[in-house]
Image (tube, rainbow, N blue to C red):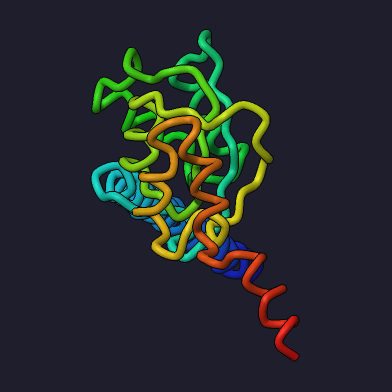
Length: 185
């Protein structure tokens, strides 16, 4: 009797070990599949960002002055744009700079860049070299530049003088008109 109990216990223990082995093997297989699917998902998302042209915040009307130094590398430019909050992913910008071979075309200077600008628009601005005037504020409000958003921004920053003139003329009102109306009362 004792030997039959031992044989039954041995068979049960052997079956439990086999079941645990297959359970662990299944768990490892599921983890491998998860890692592969997650890797493809991340690769697809990154590739989509690199080959599409999207903006961080499409409706944002604020502008940030970003300073690019003469000794900046492509990675430094990407990190600066990311740190200033105008791009979503610094590695996507780095890939766009490398793939488009913009590295040698990036000009040093201060640029007014908005989170509503796409990666390609930002690259056009920093490779064109149309820097903002010295001494401007860090954050600019697009309502001071004009009502047309990006079109006004591109026109306003064609030269250093036009950016300050555009902010004054965009309102369209003359303060002397207000005093004339008060005199009639």
